[in-house]
Image 1 (cartoon, protein in one colour):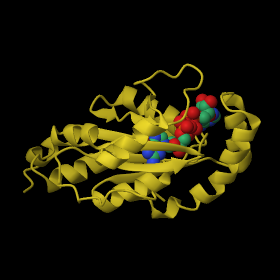
Image 2 (tube, rainbow, N blue to C red):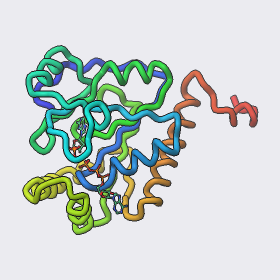
Image 3 (spheres, rainbow, N blue to C red):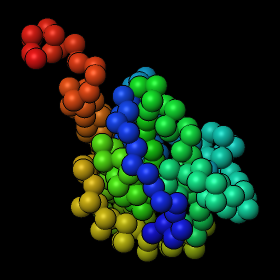
Image 4 (cartoon, protein in one colour):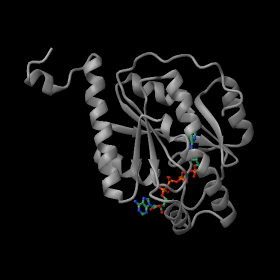
Length: 217
Ligand SMILES: Nc1ncnc2c1ncn2[C@@H]1O[C@H](COP(=O)(O)OP(=O)(O)OP(=O)(O)O)[C@@H](O)[C@H]1O
Ligand SMILES: Nc1nc2c(ncn2[C@@H]2O[C@H](COP(=O)(O)O)[C@@H](O)[C@H]2O)c(=O)[nH]1
């Protein structure tokens, strides 16, 4: 768990929705979120900061803001993070400024973060919708990590070990999606986002258009 987070102040009820997607490494959350963003123009993904080195084709400011240990620590000390955690030996964090500005502007934001960060966020922002992606089997998870071809065998082994602990946290999430067939999982994710958007808009200032059409109060 986050060892030295700043005391987190509860966030106000923003007009935008916050979705948090977690999964063990290799379960497919980045692929699913990327596909979801292509289908849903109202969703924005937040780019995290990390101390991990870039891999493959990753670019600074696109997949992550890649920063050194000192810079990351300075951000923690200044209280710049909404949440942060140590994951697979590196530190990752979500910048407070980017999220709050977007939610305040009524945008819907998706965070792709680990379970520790997700649980921190639920505490300070209970309206956040927590979604956990499960792989269909351990064997398939291993094959996906190997097929992705971006991590060494040692890193893959460590991620498989960590995955056992991570999937045990799924029960704390609002929804679980099994990513066996990609299109089915994407459909499930899309349905959750859509249903929550309708539900929350009834509790807030904006009413879904269908409420007016049906003359509901
Ligand atoms: N339903 C699926 N069936 C088969 N392969 C899949 C499926 N979903 C994703 N993959 C593949 O599995 C690999 C891992 O997916 P991805 O990188 O999206 O995982 P991730 O959960 O975001 O991992 P990390 O947390 O390490 O970034 C990729 O090569 C991706 O193309
Ligand atoms: N708590 C947070 N976890 C994060 C954040 N950004 C990414 N992550 C998680 O880290 C692992 C490893 O990611 P990888 O890109 O190195 O494979 C994965 O579970 C991510 O979801 C964050 O800002 N906070």
